[in-house]
Length: 264
Length: 324
Ligand SMILES: Nc1ncnc2c1ncn2[C@@H]1O[C@H](COP(=O)(O)OP(=O)(O)OP(=O)(O)O)[C@@H](O)[C@H]1O
Ligand SMILES: [Mg+2]
Image 1 (cartoon, rainbow over the protein chains, first blue to last red):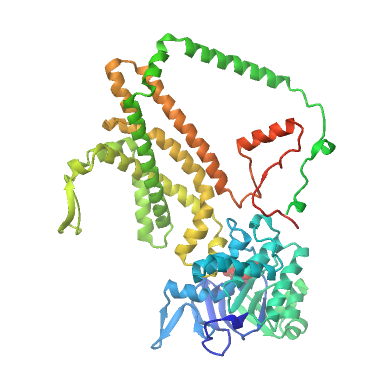
Image 2 (image 1 turned 180 degrees about the horizontal axis):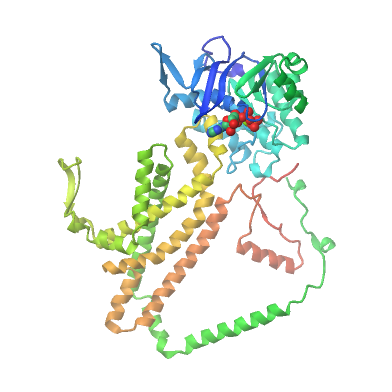
């Protein structure tokens, strides 16, 4: 996947680099200094109790939220800012949008466009944002549908698809922009248990193809199997992180132990 | 695709044959209504003072038809300008810039807060406060184009302005409600894909807001058709004023008002039918199946009676079925 990319990576450093990232909503500080590194091709699973700031952190990575402190860089470039002469300059919308287009995001509630068919959902952004001819975008969209196992459902509207099918279309829609990084926010939490497997299979394939992924999930089994690094967050900070075996099977912190005892 | 469609009633094998519940109350109510309606029709048709012959004489009178054309023109202009203005004002109202949002709120407050009749009169007399209308440098700088207000603001322009600007305020509220009805996850997903805010609004939010915007807009259009009759106060010969001009000479008020009503009824009926089909179109993707049109329903009941396999209970929304 990532080798299809036309824009050369700015550095060969990490894909995501967060240093003391802070985020406030009004007076409430939700992220209290997140420090985290995601290497190229790495899969990082974010775990943590509800309200710990996992979604907020993901949204900061593609600049859907603006950070209030610390440094956050994707592919060597600061998120939302340009550094010039030791000063930070806010980016114009055009620039923000260009960088955002290189990061795919998958939501808990799919957020497919209900007035577009599955195929149109996937082809929309490449046409609108990248200026791809519609025919070519449709051909590629069809290939992506095949890849997520829904090659015959291109004409269906989202309301005519099951949750698991919708989420796979949503993944295909994100992949259509050929992202260098994929963010998943609890992609299987809204699904009936028997539909979770299909979505995880698609994600597993993506990871195997070398996609860099940050996944917020409560699927401990998936994290254990696919993640290179598991990060446990609580109350706006990273409590501990490391290989799945270490964090999941031999947690060092009480808070991690308490959380894992509830979800396992 | 057809294999996973839920089974449709096919032939006599699965059709349940049962004696329907008897409903004597319904028959009684229907009989009473029928008698009342027949009586009303009879009294209208046989009342000589209604002078149906005169109604017929004036229904296609040149002056009436000219008035009708003016009424339709005013309706179209007011609605087209009103909708465009409404979208603009709604987007402004939702802007994060307080000055822009405030300007929109002020406009809506002003135009919804004063009677339309007063606005129509005010536009008609605008020439008395601004005798010249000019386009040029603000605060009294050199003018680029300009003209005499009395010449520029004809009665027709005054009427169009009054109706359109007033409609804009109402449409703004309708469009705003439509935009707010679209789940925030939609703009989020669009922006995550790299769409700009303008693209998100145009391609993702507004098309979905249409489902909420279209029905009240249809009502507004029907209401506007009738509201145009208010401009008769500034002596614009639309349908009503055209009739008034005629009966001020021949004193046949009621027959001429009936002529006016017939024309209004005809066009409100046409608009209602149009509204039904447009609403159906914008419901696409929201219900799994579209409701049948009256025509399709009629066809279906006819085929069932002839004992042939019935059409599906609802028309398929798309080519895709809904399988596992
Ligand atoms: N737009 C917002 N305005 C105000 N507060 C917010 C906003 N978004 C999130 N928050 C708050 O920030 C905190 C962290 O929320 P976040 O959604 O990041 O948690 P989470 O770890 O993803 O939880 P969950 O597992 O329930 O999804 C919560 O207390 C939430 O109420
Ligand atoms: Mg969350």
